[in-house]
Image (cartoon, rainbow, N blue to C red):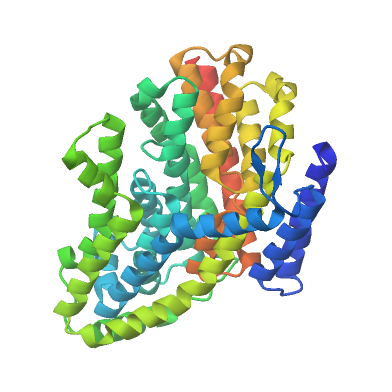
Length: 463
């Protein structure tokens, strides 16, 4: 099946999947895998591997499902495990509470949601949003207990900040690849600057939505404001003396610095043994491994090394369901990308080209919603739009930069079940999938619209 019928079937499949999860309480892993299998069969993906006329191999449905599942594990599986392990150790040693106190002292007790949003926005410039959420989640949880703020509001605020810089600001790979494809790879400073500017309105709207939805949806780890003081004082008393600020911060800040240095060296095109070493240490898996070492040193300093085995065991039990559901989302995205849907959308792109700056946004949003990956939406849309830039009327570096921003805005609209970040946010945020649709999915819709509105206004003023 191809064309519009396939798109209609995809929409129906997503609706059925949501109903299976939210209304019939079928486990997300089973629901997503079943929908992926059925959708793959309807889309015409062969049931066995075949050889095309040009000699290339066309993967069968089983191979597509396997590669989608394993691909997710290879990209963020270990990152999630190590990040969760660091978080568990920070909680056990009291370092998470110390970090929460540091944040409160910096921005004030009345603005924890804003603090998490801005923290996520800064961290995700060099770090993938998935990794960033896992790294910062211990601070989020500690702040929930420290301030009595809505856990959902803190989760949505953190997700907003992470997602905006993830799609807008190099050196994150998606914006870099899109800028290079559009022909402005040598103007990354302009792209970075406009990424900062285009984040302003969606940051404000995301903050407002976080506080709005936080009053209406409760998470599993929701704190009761009436118990916060007692709970916090009891926790501090249990730890005795909290770790120092540096010891608390090192397991989080060292991986961030390593990943940032790796991105900077790569963007600068530096070569040599030292550059290779930084590139190695800056890969998320290795960077978080270094962070884990600092966390273990902290655990040893707290004289709790006898608990390390149990901490590891409990962490693996916690992240296991998250990993499998996330991998199932990867399967759905792979099935979609292996069907003819993306090709159909690409071949009919000229029909939408009369929409100006809204065209790259809409195309990117369609691709994002269809296959789940923001990076894929960024790079694919950039490839489609690049030949159409003269037709759209964007030929100057600033004009093309705004097109890049519009693509980024679409690349986060919307995050749902086929997006690994959706499952990271909902599971680590202590929310069911149904609550995830009300929070993460709706928030990405709201901030995506806010972003394209700001970009459209800027295009009228600047160009």
